[in-house]
Length: 420
Length: 114
Image (cartoon, rainbow over all chains, first blue to last red; front, side, top):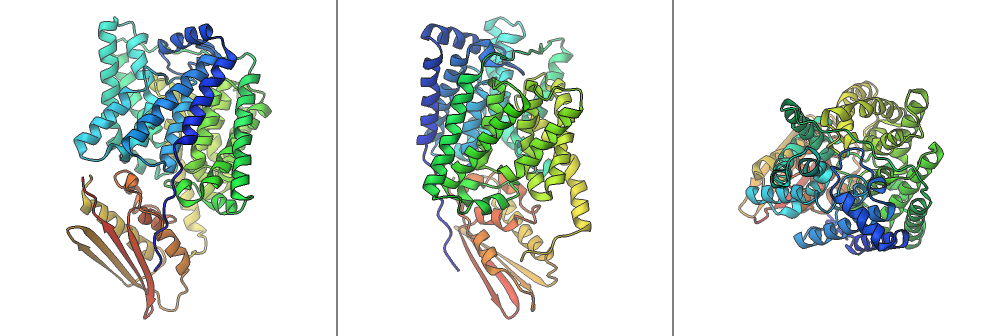
């Protein structure tokens, strides 16, 4: 017998640093007047898909919103006493990523408050559910939509919006636990799947009473040099830091062998430098994909890339992500959607939620499910009216549920040799 | 805190699956639910079969993550490939040995105060 390994957790410092960097960068891009005017427009936007805060506000205000929200989030997480597991790290970076297109300082807090109430009700420490609370903010537009989107007076819209957000948070944990079974841990955005189902039910109700959620499409298509350079320097820095502190690539091969299926907590199973290296490489892959596709690095695409980076601590690595990216790219090149369009690129970046399928069943399986995901994700937004920012999480859940039993059947027929 | 019995049942199922999917046909599971801890022991006849003991120990020696106690335990009992890893996240101590042709896995899980 040997002792249990000690969990040497990552400190909160890099997350604070990232948040402060984004806020500082905002002031380098915009004047304070432009920045705060843009921030106001962001805060009062209904924020359903696709609300690119770089287009609605400005590039600087989108950066400021993301940085400020990340700092608030990290303070909150630290206050709960939670440790930085892979899931917590991923959920914090996701908040930053989606603060470029849908999450803001107004709409993000009611859902974690609901999860907190659930934890109190259930007698479980809130820190155990902190990652669910943060992932759950993918339904933040439900709050903004009620306050600013459906035409209710503020006296009604504000309390209704807040109450709906808190209610969603309250039911989120039990539902998302159950939905793990639906895709058996092969869809990394499990909470995205759950809030997609909740959003679907909610929008069904609103439509029943003739309250229409108006679809929007605000997408920044201007010069992306400043955004691209910020991300390039950030990810290159992470790779260099990882290589330097890890003294090369040692141990990385082992990380690449992981299928990525839930629960693959790389921060627990591997070293911090290795995970930072992995995250940086995924970020560079995402950026390269956008450039090779001919797309613009706008708000939603920053969110997509940061989501890949986030899950570099919780299941994704270049080996299981590559087949998915290639699968969506080839499908986009063959179908009616423009591979350089924001929607197609977003599907590719977020389709990596299915990376565990590539990790478990191989390259061809990953390539095929990516094609299926492209078809599904492009069609499913209507059912939740764009209120679920994790549209691909919803789609990914269905694709995994559809594909995994068939893939299991094939692997059962041709089993691998037992490892132990 | 979710029902402790339900969690122990899932851990037990995971261990049983681990043996069954490796075609071990004779096995025994012992559960000891004490006031402060739960002990789970499983024994399976592996005969002359070779077992990668180091691999099992490495997986079970994953640190206990109380953060995952009330959430990802739902995945237990389903994941043949990573079974022992998840079990490692939910237990405090593990002993693995081979005696008289039997693979023995013994786990300790301390109960958490609310």
